[in-house]
Length: 367
Image (cartoon, rainbow, N blue to C red):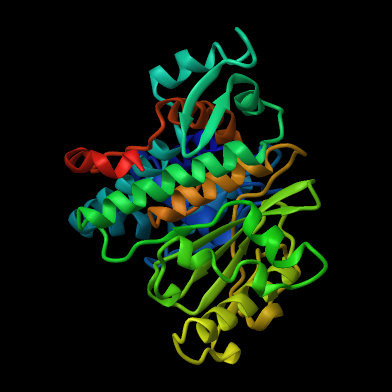
């Protein structure tokens, strides 16, 4: 398996004229294109600037790879010399994205110190009482590495993200707000004997949503048979419904149900006529599907390789997508992300760089 560290080290060995930041840019571009950093052979990909991106496996023949790259070595050096100022500008933007992703997924020192006590003390101790939920230490212990997340933790995290989104909207940092349904929405919609719009018809009214088509995102965590967590995200302005599953399944049942919900909701609330043919239902790319669900561009997302991290993936997906950040991470990040989630729940709020002005409207967070 090629980790970020290994990729950067080998890339710089083969391209001694480039900086670590430049190698990091290539790593993330390869991640976006392939959706994985696993490789059993050399993968050659031409970038926009015609420079090869190379992912190497530990078993690859380095000498043959060097020969492959020698042909383009001079042109690569020229490219870096001629376009150095342009490249630097692009890199600054990319590094900002990487730093933002790390901030979302990385625990603070305070988070780590609090997490050390996750198994200590009375399991019935109430760690925080907020959002009409008494979050006990026992409920939070599902954040211990190797545990399957319960719905209380996922819903609490979704609610904190909703409040953060509301704060960004109230302080005019974003133009449109998003909505975050809890884990019971999809269960009510489809898992009680078939599709039943009436079960959730009043949910948008309770959430004070006048027009769901004016939202930036609609996030819906999905519990599949009490065995697996996935995520539906509706992009009303793009007319897309996307299914994010770390096991890379198609999610056809849930995509179709959400499409029906959008249509029924628009009729019930007199929003207008929705034509299904104008919408795309998008599944994760798994190497086989290509045009299923009226779609030609499948999602490339991180893949789960164990049986317990699905809920943590869902929290990470919602967290990053809420801030319009790409899903440039893999399962190795989740052990630390569990600690970050724990700390944020104990504090009862989520803040990132650039959110500080929201302190001026702290009453938003007292809802």
